[in-house]
Length: 171
Image 1 (cartoon, rainbow, N blue to C red):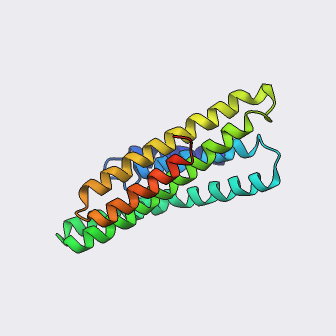
Image 2 (spheres, rainbow, N blue to C red):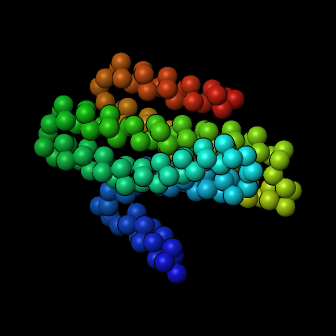
Image 3 (tube, rainbow, N blue to C red):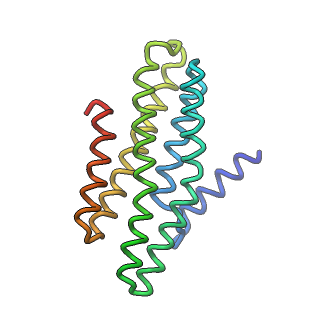
């Protein structure tokens, strides 16, 4: 099966030492999977469209995260402080968007509990668990990137953005 080969290839790529595919790519894939699973369970056309957009954007983030991480490594190797800061900011944007999307999927899962058939509640809970994993993974990556940066104003803006996404999550 072609899908199996693609999944296996991605997992092999993540497992390979020195691969640019790491936590950010995995978090993006988790968010895409959570959105996809919820998409098949809900019946609201506007929500389905929103979940489809999240899924597609998160799939695009898988490669984008690897590319931005490669940019960080390149700037580090060149000992280019400004380049490192620029690359870290670009690399922080991907997990920020993944975190925001994961929060949206979590909210949608909570809302869908009332309308999803009882026989499908296990899939709904699975979607929620995967969205939680995506969000927590993304949050960890954000904080790690910010720790490397020496830009308090930027770090404060990103932390407020993460807090705002988390607050709308009911936290």
